[in-house]
Amino acid sequence: MTDSTTERSALFEKGGHLYMVVAAVFTGVMGAIGAVAFRLLIRFVQAIAFEGPATGIENLLDEGLTAEASDPLAVAEHLEWYWRIALPMIGGLLNQGMNPAAALAFLVAGPVTTLPAMAAVWPLVVRRVFVLYVSFALGGAVVIGCIYRIINSLGG
Image (cartoon, rainbow, N blue to C red; front, side, top):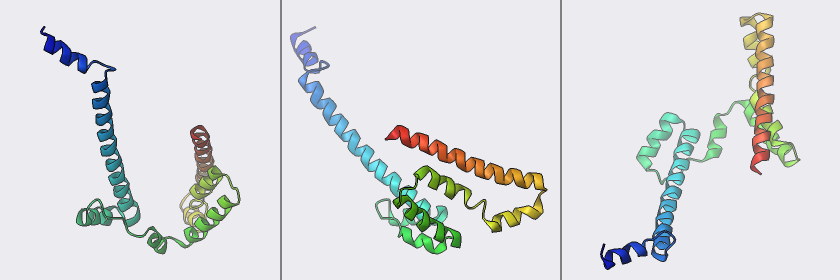
């Protein structure tokens, strides 16, 4: 091994100055690529959520990934009447101190336990199945709320 080879390997020795500079540059470049990829993923999810899967992907391809999604408030025009009432009501309750897990449970159980939904299921099934339908809906909403509360308490 020659002295020049030894000197070059010493420059890139782990913990050495040049090694740390190269590692910092590499980390910075990868972080920048990750941030851009994350932003593009957000745009992709917005396109699907706010514009619908077919329309959103079509608009995404036409406008490009860097174009912003359509107005999320325009989605409210197509919501069912009970969502137009429930969402602002939940927002107000959250502002007044309602537990977010309870709000999630309410939003999950709400569509299943509306009178039109229950009235549609009642004539199709026997009483035992209907009770199971409502029980699973309410029990599932409570379980989802509890899981959300546990996850939320772990995160912050």
